[in-house]
Length: 468
Image (cartoon, rainbow, N blue to C red; front, top):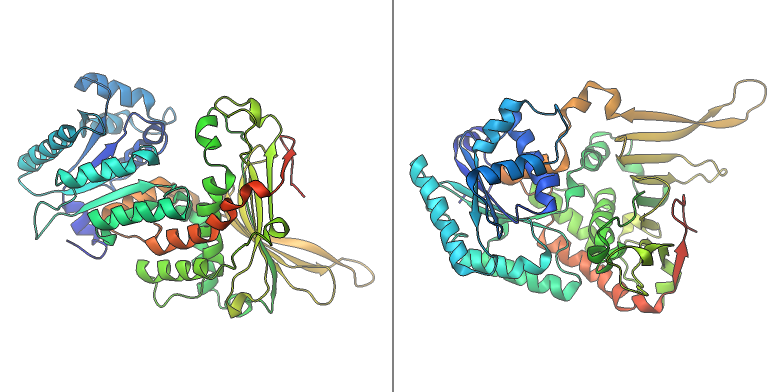
């Protein structure tokens, strides 16, 4: 089984079966299928591929095609009708219950029939487009049916794609990791944190290590603080039941926010291989200074937007937070005493994700600020100061900006799921979370959650710009 990313030719020539377990769900319609269709239209899928949808609903072949055509989240005119038709020709459906062993045996037989038609052992990629509570049962059935085993020692691989959250605390994460480790090798496991595939987040590494002017000042002697923000204008909007079981810290704090921190704070890796990059990200997360019961109220704020308790699916009197701010530190010489502020909230005045790096200025209050804008309006900007025209020596701020939308590069930017699926096909795990990263992030977050109820829950009005 290949241990390194495939070459372009090997990837293109080797037939591959993509199995979506839970294809009738929202994630498949909103993210997976549009991404697969985009890759197909760009000729970035293998020359021979098949997509098998698996779910409990009953469809005829034509009913399934119509269901996919109606549900797939694409804009009118986004793709050629010919491409949509041919893409659907590659799709088929297998009905079954997630807890029924015979359904997986039938799925295995269907894949074997496809392989026979191709006259070749195919690659197999499984995506669990299901709630995390179903992971354990599905993974076990995949293993028992032999679907996790490549059909040949010489060719063909089997890989598994799973979505966050990976557990809801360190104990559940360890249990899931233990199961994954028992059934699959680490190189077979692709854990999706789709924020890692954002273009601007990837550009952080290139920006830092390709521009020699920044790396020497990327340390505590020159940086005052780092502010990471992930705001959403929307409220929970129909996801009340799901969100109420998570809250802001579990939903995006434990994963997206900490991954953003890791990319900003990591040291230069030995190489830019997936192994070395992921090891450096994990090293940062393992070095976070833990928040104790004593320091919780000093370093963490949790809040809930007014009206949350009226959302459908939210439990009466729920104490689930929709906003959280954490002040954290990294116990390494480079970041000595530099505070990192992680802040995320729903029902804010705007939707945005960005990272602000404030540089020290011993002479006055004018601080240079370097901003990575992850979404929307992906780009990078730097605030600096120049002399105000006229008499005297007053200074004023000016901004130097780079926006992808202002260049010809914008048309080449793939969305996050396009990039993730493509990388899973070729075996590149750089943009996927490793076991070490998952465990380190939960090690940091779990002590906060264990004392969550001791922290006052404040409220804030919808549409607020920021929370003090």
